[in-house]
Image 1 (tube, rainbow, N blue to C red):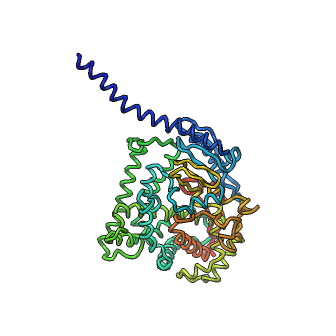
Image 2 (cartoon, helix red, strand yellow):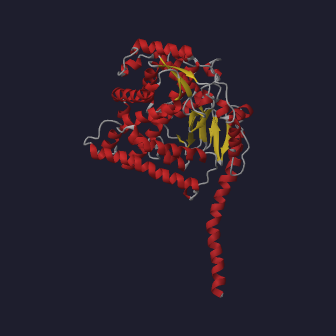
Image 3 (cartoon, rainbow, N blue to C red):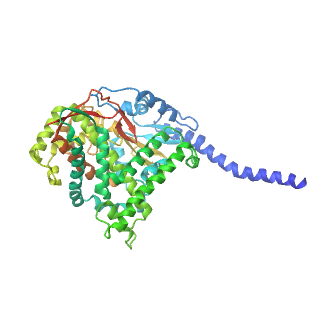
Length: 512
């Protein structure tokens, strides 16, 4: 009895010693830090929606998005920012273009100033790093791929991958892109008169085929499991966005987590199968993206990639290579279906530079399509596949007139910045490709106003690949078909990791 009496206080003390620090840390993160940071920003004239314990402003954001996504816009309207980010639209009107809000207990500073954004994205100091993402998203794109590694690891990955996206390599890939496009156009050959086609779906199929074939040497048939699995993972990740993130919950056996774990295993097995197939079948591994990465494994210097890193890079490029590119083609097709005058201008240019019946097969040919390049840039401005960027401050620092505390996430709403009339002119909400007639740097009042591919050291490594692919696909479609919107089309852009039409893109194809 005396022993029990002695043990109980000891156990109580041990529990207290374990629990007390955890409770103190929770108090600091959930109560004290939001209070202090709100005051620090308020002294600088920056305010925002009120922080709510644990949830921050997540409930408000979800509510406004649910209400917004019920609406359908006029198909001639490019003013899509209020539908995609109704919370930003409301808070900008209340607090100005720079404001503070809360993703749970994480401070989020929204900045739309082009010069400040340029300073952040151009910085090589290491003080602004890619923002932390929820653990579920790493299953989708890999945590050890180029998109998320930092410092010396990022430099190592970039040096290894650069040759795969060189101009010379791009010329080789042109033939592959043309062949993939011909395959899907052969499937469309049954269209003898005007017929409706769901273009969002078709472009996803095509860009999946191209990235699989050009970068990984497998056909769409062999890589189909990867794309299907990524689609399922994407749905799971999107559903996570509406929930508050509590560290450690990714390990709980919830129905959603179990589904994500299964899909993650399936994804890794599918990618590993492609990697193993290459290792067994080719001595020199080839000179595509996968071959270049595999050759690095045999390197004896510090630049080599591990198999785990290669698998994550494959996941990254599988996703980026078809998700963003298919959306670029989708929105450009929508715009050309609305603006028949520009569709005819592009068709005339295609006929002049590529011919009416000839299959183009040279990258030099596509570089002559000046009007088409302008149309794609305008499409990227109005309907950028990635609708915002963010960076985390790794230390207390000063940015322009702002003092930003360590740990603050800085968000740049590209959609707002790309439609800013003070930068782009009074027609900023209009489709006007001619604004790019003298190049990107002269299209607006700020030379770095177009940020669809980001800028600075972490500019998108695949931007030339994406633009070449888009030109090839659109050229070959315009040679064969006239495009117009179906009466079934509903103009409802939605942000689901990338900007996509909520109800698809039904288009009427009319053979020429």
